[in-house]
Length: 341
Ligand SMILES: NC(=O)c1ccc[n+]([C@@H]2O[C@H](COP(=O)([O-])OP(=O)(O)OC[C@H]3O[C@@H](n4cnc5c(N)ncnc54)[C@H](O)[C@@H]3O)[C@@H](O)[C@H]2O)c1
Image (tube, rainbow, N blue to C red; front, side, top):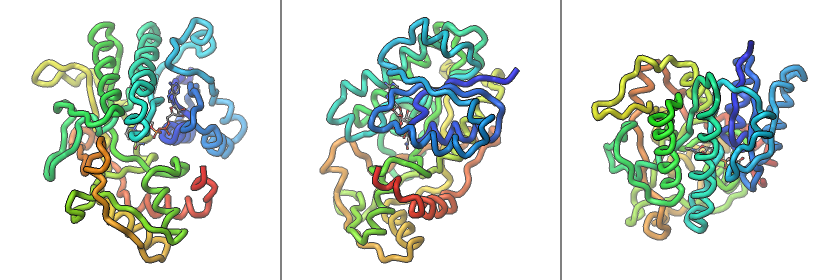
């Protein structure tokens, strides 16, 4: 019998790419729960799913649910038995978390507690994958690459709620034996990303000959940097982990059992290089200004960085971000309705 996966946040940017990947590479049934807020856009999912034959489209079911509420027995019966859960639903906009921290505690901590409480009661659940972020480690000084079990140091409510939710996942594995894993992913880009995010925003500004603001240090000499990774790579990594036999992986040297995995992009790219690349692909000059974003806006960090060696040793490596960036830029310019959503 084919497997069934429950994915939370399927109308969101990353999860709709994950659903696309599962549709194209497995015969699994997919159920997604989403509350469809301003960041959840069903058109994303519709655009992807409708590119498959009708028989494949039937493999995807969307259920409207806000995870701030528990999954009641009627909802559980509607979902039916599942083999995997991939929990991606979350408030994901850092600025919004600074304005509305309690909203993020409800969505990201309480929401995770509700899906965990549902998951712990499922007989035969093969894996619960919690999708977390590199931001839990806080800013990375030059030369530092955080490993999976390094200390956390949240610099904004968003990352603190993601770190808090991680600890709930760890506790549910230790307390109830939930077969859980946690991933840390860096800045993800790709088709149909929210137009407020840096890459679509720069694509649009360059196209419209507007000034691009580049976040930099206090002296405005060093641009902030990230390891950018395409959503398709992230989806591949997630599927790789759902299928990976982790039974022989032992706790770390301090006894921490829950396995965590850094999903890291190949290339560390600074914000100026990135904007220049986007301009080059469009054959345009870049009109830019370096701004001291770090000290003007609390909760934003100049550099994040993760160590990807654990996944590399397991046999998973990402593609080069530059190739995928070029494809994404060209796709976005052709499908520019996504720049105004
Ligand atoms: N985008 C990135 O670069 C990045 C990097 C690392 C980790 N992450 C994590 O990946 C996940 C997905 O990120 P994204 O960029 O696709 O976000 P997104 O904002 O595009 O999508 C989030 C989805 O979750 C849904 N959602 C939010 N709160 C909910 C709730 N209470 N109940 C039900 N649904 C709810 C929204 O409606 C939306 O569809 C998040 O957990 C985020 O923390 C994102």
